[in-house]
Length: 400
Image (cartoon, helix red, strand yellow):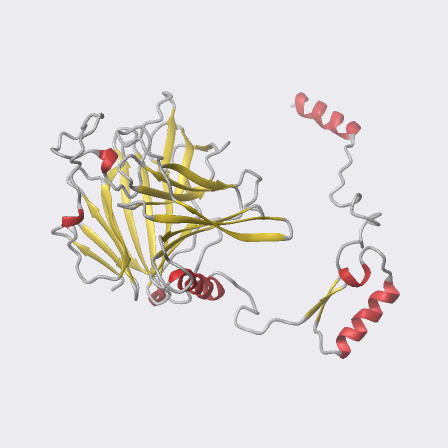
């Protein structure tokens, strides 16, 4: 089994061929992130639960000795508690409150992996390829339910995570922040790696020391863009292409995103990835639900190359779709460098015939065929406003 639940110690053990990811439900019904790394055989890692020996300036609202939420590695922290680190979720209620108190409310384990409604995601071809864990969290006061979904691709050595928020209350709820994955590490001995760039020079590897405070990459462009890729990795100091521990976070989403790492005063690192909270608000009516994009988590003990191979294998076989997923794709020719904007039917046919004689199977007609596109200063995305039509439409609307 890829997912094991130990009832006596309330522990969930997610296992691939090489990876273990372990969660535990505490006495307070907070869900604790206990371990992520090389596959281990034991399920009981209670000895890893640390008491907050340094003390805290914040109240212990659960009245449990030595328990302080700000020093606890939470699996999906909410806003407004005594954990003042970056939250994974923030909701706003009709009374103006933005405080949530999400506690464990049950679980479900089943074979297979359902698709994410309205969103791209990894998929399976039969139910034996993946196993799914749903952990239910609930804010009893506000009657909001949160489902943490984990999909374990045992043979691909991948764990995916996504979150669903369900408004079961009698009031409207605004979602201000809803990240797809949150992982609390017990240390900060990592380098922060991301892929930065610009048009025509995308995906430059940027590697910096993880330091106290917050380091993040994001997009506010409406798309993930060539400037930043919705991916980050935490690599152990000294790790390289072939050796060392690497933790990868990849978001299957093409819109605004945030990838964030916070190192707190106890030198613990909190890594997060999901939809960018910047300028984000989603109204959740009574009975409605909201689904976050899928985050794909990969652990490699074989350095950056090991991580890359896992991602490449999964995405090529269980994210890409279509006729040519498992086939050699057609050889194509693109007319751009041959003609730029200056072409006509005659020279296009000449290029196509020569390409066909060489065994090239696909022709791509590039820029310059539309409008008055004779250079790169016109016709691409030009819009013209019909002021008279807008005026008439507005008058008709106001009459209703």
